[in-house]
Image (cartoon, rainbow, N blue to C red):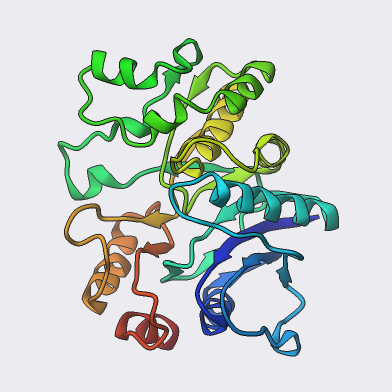
Length: 282
């Protein structure tokens, strides 16, 4: 039994894999493995990889705003399940990084709610609010009727009839979206998602609706609490974290609010960027 499977998709060159490996080695503790869908440039020197790093064989092509990303995540989960049973999956994008000590949880945890209210007390993002399953195909209509601005990823989701049928077959009662990086998903909904995710479909960011939908229905059925995401994302002009002071502030806040996440998102891709250098050096 593995407590935690960390899943990452890496489309940059091999240096990103090595940087993330050192970041995880520095901050993550406990019984975990890191499963990687690598389709970037350059060869991976497998002799440099510790036993807790697992490369998914035969990675496929991925492109943002298509279901190929969600399908690659599903492939990582399926690969992990073929090798071991695990408690939870943590999704970690290559634009995310740990910034403080993290212990792999030893019990089931559902995490995906955002930290928006931490940065803006008047902010309530519609994609974290559950939508009744009878609104399948009409989520945009539901959001507009209830006064939410914008439809986020639900315009594409409304057209994804293949996945709609699978949600109905599982008896799900809710649809719920969230930013994908930083989610924590227990074994059962993770396996369900991996089994159901088709390789194609309409153009939208499927992983930002489906992962949390599977988690939310699982949590609702078992009356599990839903925690905030592990990834702290400050939406708006500051979305790309380019100043080490932001990381220092997050570390300071974590002493006051122990429940705050352990992952910062999004940081520049360059492994030599000051923020990435700071994270792995301090």
